Image 1: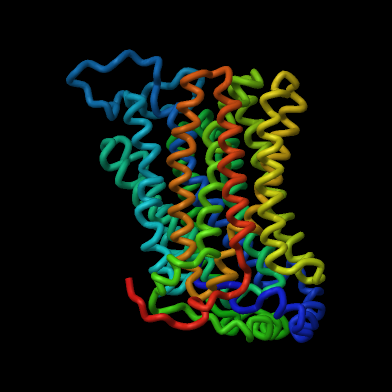
Image 2 (image 1 turned 180 degrees about the vertical axis):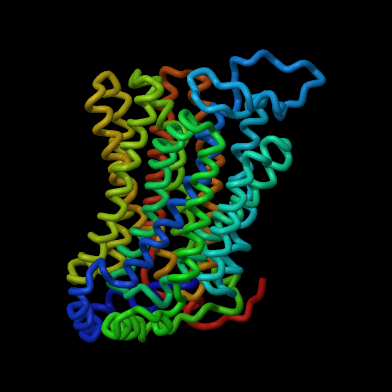
Length: 493
């Protein structure tokens, strides 16, 4: 989420650099108590917060819209009335307003966050290369958290204001997702980059899990506004921690040990990857290694978005699990993904530091595992759905192995163009969001046409899309800095 991390240090450079390996051994005693790992945990918390805020409206929507209430008279506002504060939803002990929003309005409100994220993807990646990560991440987190606190009031004021708030939150989220990579330009030693990034990114998975479990509990016990207040309040507190504890450069950090500071500086000494002041657009368009990454961003996220959108429905309708238990099981499967995304980063760094595999081999292997295994087991789901235990095991394998892509193609842009990492991350978010629009739409069409065979068609199509992207990636991917990213090319946007 910024301009470069792995820089010009490729697997070959690392293998031939006894200095870097020596300092790595020296620093092994620091372990997870290091400042850089503390920074990864702070970013983990930031990602955790933005995803709980993203999912807050989805979790609270059933409580905000009371389908048991008779339709309002024509002259009644669809935004609820003050009297609603004195009514209690069936099954809810807390009082909260209710709104007569149609399914179309609900869908619009839920999509506004994605609209903001989509519109801001490339501009945020470009801006992230112009400012410091401390400023961008902290400011975006603070803005999103404050807006989260005002969502209950915005809902009362009207659909338009609520939509505007969610769009701005989407912009803030994508700013955090792109600009956080800028931190690792000066903080991530090449042999630890995968684990640091996956520790940070795993916050998205943990945020989804927590929103499913805690969000529903808060809505039921304290009323749906509490979900926005709690997650927004935590975000405000975290933004204060961020500005207090984070420094863009390890040489400026007041609490870092001399040993860790020297280790990081020596490890990154060869990289020389300052942010580019201009974008080599023509060279980027002609770069097949870059296109292989972008295509894989689209295809790998296709399967991810299908799971995120339809996993609870699949568990409920196909496996015949009750609604509440379906939520718990979905959270459990997300927990599996959360654990394995971190383990994947640790394994990738282990293979690289021990010179077992080259960097390119690691990227290809982890991408292949993250595509082939989920594709195989998701297709087999259609034939084992009658066995609850087997189906859940297959879903767990799908969630666990699909997370390996994070240490594969999904971070490969940092290898080939560290100078333009911020911009390329923003560009990759566009492709990921594009699959997020198309995949659920197509999947919903299949289910609507034939519920019995719809799930089989969904998994077959997801596997086909995923494997096509994998083949393209295996053929054209590279892991060394490209010529257009090594030298400044003055082709402006």
